[in-house]
Image (cartoon, rainbow, N blue to C red):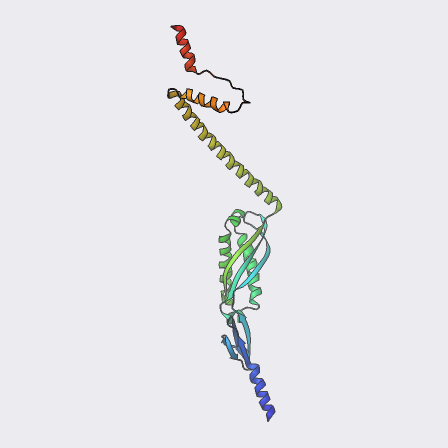
Length: 245
């Protein structure tokens, strides 16, 4: 009779299962779904019941480089990373085979389709909106599988070499344009200030003499300079008046 006891012990031991906090178990009784096993020490009847573990932690999928054509017919390569988690373990096992692979394939095809609906400029300048659109489409398609897509991030957009050169020249031309505008604006301000200074010197008595003396003082600080004295117009007029008298 002792061997019956051994068989019973082995039978019970085979049915004891440990489910971690980040896992769920999908149990089947005679092939029919019979519930989800929560974390802790659980018992599954051998022979009559089977189960599968499902990790419910957030997972990251690296979406590899995909050849795509934008709305304005530019051939590019784009890749991304997708974050998802299993929200309903029973659906992830029953509704789809290898749910991780299925999510990856769906993300690749969706990314190519969405990139084909936008222009290159929008793809480069509005990555967040493109990523959000991919997320919404993939999340909706994976709802029947019990999958929740948390986010999608475009990582890199690879452009053709000739297009890179064109964009580089365009950026350089834009910088030169801004430099010319800034320089012209500075010259306009300088001309306005010079006009104000000339007007002040012409209207204020003695201002021109003071400016002349200041210029002579600045020049005399360097002995290597050759100084040419310009006689103010007022002095010439004074001499002319003395001659007439």
